[in-house]
Length: 236
Image (tube, rainbow, N blue to C red):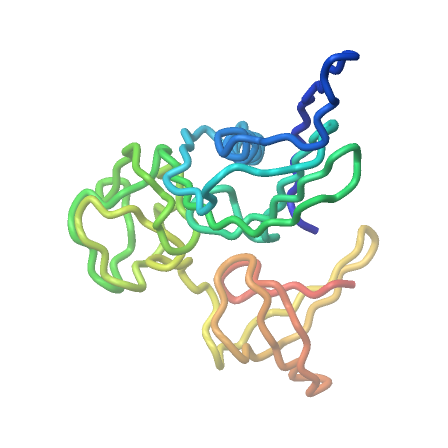
């Protein structure tokens, strides 16, 4: 399901006995940009960032029939509201679709972001001394960005990070608590029953990750969620 915003305004055609009623109207380019700006504002509202349209790939004015004009703006499902995207602008006059336009946009987003205080090497375990929070444009950051230091402390650097560079999901990862081939305790429990079994991990997993585990009793592989070092849980 795509994000959608509706923006409506009115154009009044006034006629008298001396003048013909206009059958067309011109919607200026600025109105189109206003509609897109409002859509971005609504989509990022409450996220604690400042957004601005850096580029809107639409030029010229819109020539439309006279009547009540409404704009509907839609974005790709995974677009968060910043960076590059192709937005769909659906233009209606008196509730009838007149235009459906694909508009490329680029949105700048300034937000408090966790950055490296100094260069971080691959394999480093991040401490609070390694990072700080600065306001940055996150529109070009690859992957998830982190807004607080607590989100990154204890994670491992998987790609070297230069000083003053924002940390992202592409550069750090959670520490694995279970390693492939390791024996683990499989737990299955309900409010009234708890079962345990011995298993062997078929992959690495951090806390909360789902990995495949071989039940040593039944010799069946099952998905299980990593709970802590040496413990996984299955749905019961």
